[in-house]
Amino acid sequence: MATVELRNVCKKFGTHQVISDVSLALEQGEFVVFVGPSGCGKSTLLRMIAGLEEISSGELRIGGQDVTDTLPADRGVAMVFQSYALYPHMSVFENMAFGLEQAKLKKDAIRERVMDAARMLQIDGLLDRKPKALSGGQRQRVAIGRAITRDPRVFLFDEPLSNLDAALRGETRVEIARLHARLHDTTMIYVTHDQVEAMTLADRIVVLNGGVVEQVGAPLDLYERPASQFVAGFIGSPRMNFLTGEIAARHGAATYGIRPEDLAIGDTGDWPGRVLLTEALGADTFVHVETDLAPAPLVARAPGRSTFRAGQPVGLTPDAGRIHLFDPAGRPVVTTERAQA
Image 1 (spheres, helix red, strand yellow):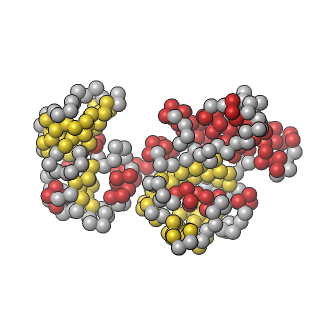
Image 2: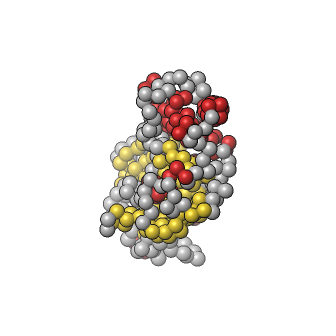
Image 3: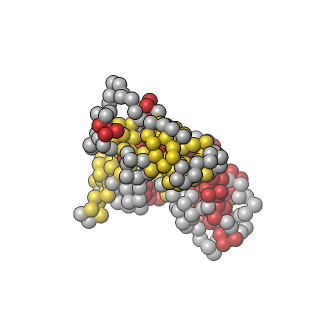
């Protein structure tokens, strides 16, 4: 069993509490992604599961066993780091075999495990090379392969793609998704600040804010039904537009939210404004519009090849069925009906 359960887990550095009363239950074979802004505690939480940070209070169970005070090597976990953490003087084969040699496995068993992992990750032609002769994406595959050879119950990934360029991130993300499909009984926990990684890889996303779990759910559940204004603003790119004042009050709320993709833009609309900036991305165009409704520009998603230009008068029309309303504490406002936008 590769279930992971955190029960009221806390972490303090001196008097500073960085993780507050986190309770989570991860099922065997799940791919769970921890997301949140810098300093929210997601990497600290991952390191606590790995045993690289001590748990100040609470309990951690893996496969039903209490491993709160168990040494990292005895937890049945393998961690892939952002920095690859490869030995520069060793070949790819030696890097992938090192942990198995330390565990005193026989040479034939070591070679079999290394070759199986290398073929899975399509790096079997690189086994004689040193890390300096590899690209960033190849180095990360070696780091993942080294973790695979240990046959762990739980994989831990700490922002593994953040050092790669955009193209390599996309390719390696596909490799990690393929790896999860092949190792379907192995639980994977992945830390990232990249929304694309979270939305495309995760079975469930855990959103952290200030060491506290804001919401746990499937990617589209968080997108469609955010449990707080923080989650609504964090999940989705570009982020949700937020308005206060008369617009929100008309709906009985402190804050009114509408996503860029739910905000139509044209020559006329419910909310008049003027184009400040357009971001033409090919398939989509993001239009930043100045209005009298908010101090910050509102962002609307338009079809690719749209020809909006700076200074052009435009109108915005929100989809009344897709608005999000929040109270002063940032919690969703439940309404039985919505006024016209």
